[in-house]
Image 1 (cartoon, rainbow, N blue to C red):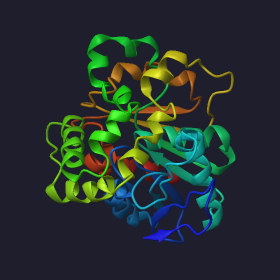
Image 2: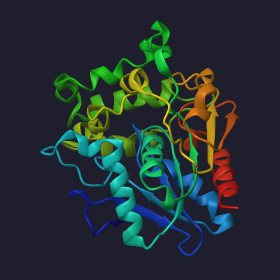
Image 3: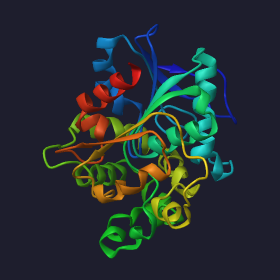
Length: 287
């Protein structure tokens, strides 16, 4: 583990780097995870000698957590500034960016703001194009946690309370994953350690408080005049309860060079549940 020595907006990032010297890949985790979500993917990318950079995003893992800043610092655009800052520090001019969940939104923000720095994207949901389908009652039952994270009650119940944090994380890692996946005790122990430190849980939900929520974005999004032109591979899981596959029907309105690939048998946590599929897509993007 290395801590970025150059802060961006006051945030330093912790990151792992493997395979230095090969084609660069930046992998971006989601909530409730951290940079180790991509450990198995990085190991598989050793076969193509890729230079894999896996940071903890702002407010996550071992990266800086500031609770006295404007919450917008934790939004996708702010997170994207830190990603670009880390690439600059490491001398990475262009890279394949891969992300899921929050990391997917951050990777998309980098591609919109700095398309010249992105060789290709490998993404899993969330993706734009959901629209008012997000208001379906069955869908709303899944997204209860996003308005909950807006409440001070969320931090009062969770922050600094290891038992509560572990139970909360276990719910999502169990409910959002595919039928054949069960998070290990070691995995939950690791994430509890990262999320249960005082202030850590509150920092981790800063991305939601900054407006990066599916419901809020889906109801206001409009297809862009200039869609993302970076070659984009979208891996869409079969069993993600948050993002039905039917929601992939409008990807072409936001990405001009998108390839949608279903990944059967898995849920929300693609790099953990299907590291081979994620590594294969990244390897193809490097070719």
